Image (tube, rainbow, N blue to C red):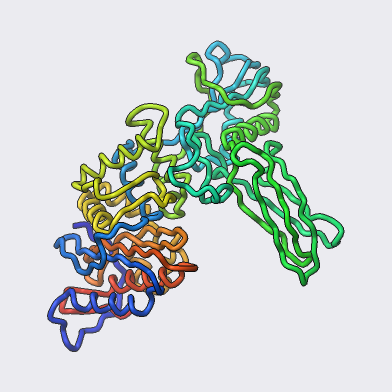
Amino acid sequence: MIGCSAPVQKYTRALQPPSHYFVPIGEQIDSLLAAYAPSGTTTSIKVVAIDRNETLYERNSSLNFHPASTLKLLTAAAALYTLPQNYCFETVVYVDSNEINASSVSNIYLKGFGDPLLMPQDIDLLATQIAQHGIGQVCGDVVIDNSFFDSLYWGEGWAWDDAGDPDAPIISPLSINNNSIQVVIIPSVAIQSQPIISVLPSTTFYHTNNSACMVTNSENRTISLEWTGFPESTTLKVSGCVRTSDPVLYFTKSVPKPELFAGELFRTTLKVHELQVLGNCKKGTLPSSAVPIATVCTPLDTVLSSMLKNSNNLAAENVLKTIAAVTFGVPGTSKNGITVLYQFLNSLGIDTTTMRIVDGSGVSRYNLVNADVLMQFLTEIAHRKDLFLRLYSLLPQPCVDGTLEQRMCGTPAENNVRAKTGTLQGVSCLAGYATTADNELLAFTVMMQHFIGKAGAARSLQDSIAVALTTISRNNFIQRIP
């Protein structure tokens, strides 16, 4: 079995060795449940020693739960299994083949192949490559080809009131800036005036309708940002009031029509590079005679790292549709991606009739998975060395990065736990791997739902269980002192 190196720790010998290895960790988890589990919460837990295939603890492990973003574990592993190790998510610029050496072209084509991490600086790299080809003028349009995916812009079961939420971005094969903008609101010192609104990255594609007002310091801030007619409108309505004492305020909003947003940024960037564009930006289809002249790409592991460490929902959905496009052909669809995911899980011996998966990110509440399935997945992956090593390296590390950056700091879990978080309103999960005091690899999953309010207490329970797992040892019944 693959061991995960642990740092030098302090140890103490238990005065009364327990009669069974399972007892101390079971008692610890039961005690933690009594102390931390929020009232009304349904909790499912399972812990397995992978080499011995021993279940060390389980509670409600056959109950179906909303997996939230722990579902990204399955999506990521399916991508690692399905796509070549050197797979790259490309964004490509084309011209007509008979204009490859021309200084002036009729149209220029921009096509996305699902890169969820494309940023404005990548658009600048594309423009630089085009300028190096000697093209100085585009007589026609910037044509956006969005055909690599289907036209369904949200996952099944995504909530309508998440429109504009950066955690529910529109899914597009040509994505830019995580398909979101930052809205900057600068308060005015005068009550009679309005705050100043700006949008980053700067673009003329989106417009703001500013009806916000200034109020005194004793009044409430009531600022609101809503798209008018999402997802068709490109006008953002800013309303409510800002206090004169407020600092500069920053808000992030997901955007409608992200492919045209990317196209407009591309067209603007071409002009910055002194490439004249006479036409507009519009959607269209790449002609069969088109040839590539500029490319940027993001490696698969870079995308999966953002997806797992930062719980990037756009990355998860783009990955799901990409494995569909690669396996079944374009356009990539979520339905075909889930078929690929189920086929992969079946290859691990998992009965997919016991679960329901409808997206790649876990945003949908239609998803249902139980701890037994997650545990079978984690243990089977651990027995596949190459797959395990890549997936393990991409998971968040406590007190180091991603969604665990502020969790379990100053504990043995810092160097001995890799796990994926999952959060929805009233749902909190943690699933992954823990290395014990004697370097034994465990798989664990903690799924919690039906609590009211914030997830702080649920996360405290998950963290305490993960830390406890790193302190146990079979060797002479030794337990690590945190």
